[in-house]
Length: 142
Ligand code: CMP
Image 1 (tube, protein in one colour):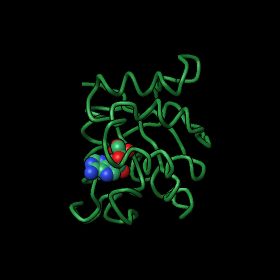
Image 2: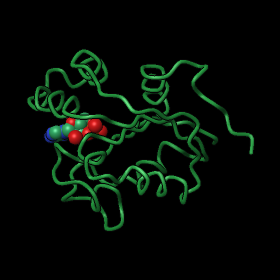
Image 3: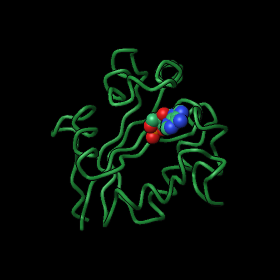
C-alpha cells in the first residue's frame, strides 16, 4: 500500500555530516521526501515525542541526546514506506544491524543510533502530526 512514514536523522548523524548520504538511501530505495526540516529540539518537544518511553530507564539519556544538537525530521512516502524505512535503518541496536543498513554504517550505540523511524502506520500518523502541519507536506504526483 502507498504509505507515509516519519523519520528523524538524529544529532549524531547530523554531526557526522551524512544527511545527504542518508537521504540518498531513502531515494535509492524508492521512498520520496514529501516534507523535511532541520530543528534543534527543546526538552519539551523531545519528552513529548518519546512520551511512550517515559518510564524506561534510558528516557533521560534519550532526551538529553536528542536535544544535544540539530536533527532533520522528514516524511517519506512510498509503497510500504513504514517497513521499507525500517529495513533501510536496520536494528535499533547497531550491534544487531545488518551490513549495509544505516545503523550498521553510521550508528555507534543503541543510544546514539543515527536515525528514528515509525514502527507502524498508526504511529507514523501520530509522529508526522507531531512535527508537521498539513500545509508543510507536499504530496508527490511525479
Ligand atoms: P528510537 O527508534 O528513536 O526510539 C527510542 C530510542 O531509545 C531508540 O531509538 C534508541 O535509540 C533508544 N534506546 C536506548 N536504549 C534502548 C533500549 N534498551 N531499547 C529500545 N530503545 C533504546
